[in-house]
Image (tube, rainbow, N blue to C red; front, side, top):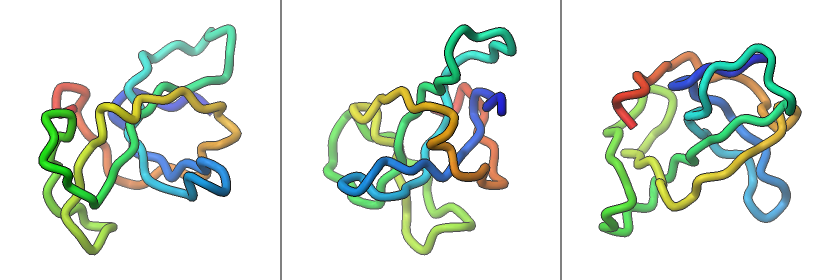
Length: 93
């Protein structure tokens, strides 16, 4: 698996974090020394923070969504459950 910048994945964040969509922001690197993706989680909880970027209502979710910039994380590729068929431009986020 080689997730690309701007792709959305359902990510398993463990029991506490549950499964949630996240946008990949790590650069494309087919020869990466580690199978890690840097991601930003999506949330439906708007806290009126400067660290949230509105995405509007996405087709696969029933509520308006935001990218949580403070939730920056790296996850192993094994935690990427499946790609969501909506790709965001790297300049969008």
